[in-house]
Amino acid sequence: QVQLVESGGGLVQAGGSLRLSCAASGRTFRSYDMGWFRQAPGKEREFVSAITWTGRSTIYADSVKGRFTISRDMAKNMVYLQMDSLKPEDTAVYYCAADIRKITPTVLPDYWGQGTQVTVSS
Image 1: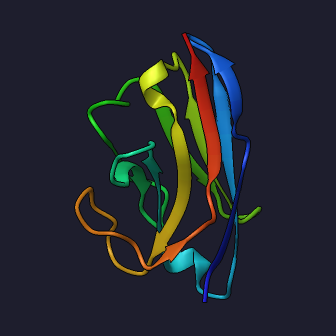
Image 2 (image 1 turned 90 degrees about the horizontal axis):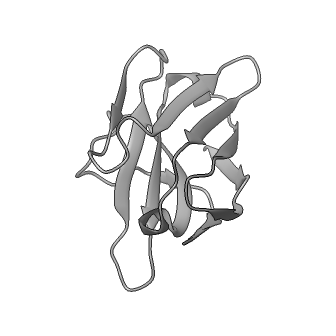
């Protein structure tokens, strides 16, 4: 089993930055792809970004490409999402996710954190 706990959410003005963190635990964590999804009020959960278990390959949703950066620190069992140039449209609950299989924009992972709220004001 993999346990995930997100942190770093909050209120920020448009154009500002925020860094989300995901603390992971579990004996197989190092073999899992990791990713971030988000869900805004009244909308379905959507893919944001993912990183392979090696940490050497990343993918991003078109809506965040060039603004967000995903990374992982294997020694600290941490996954991060650096969010720059934030827009009001980025407002959502952000979820950390993990899966032994490849994370893609269309397949929901097996393991989830409980989410952290990100609110971007105009």
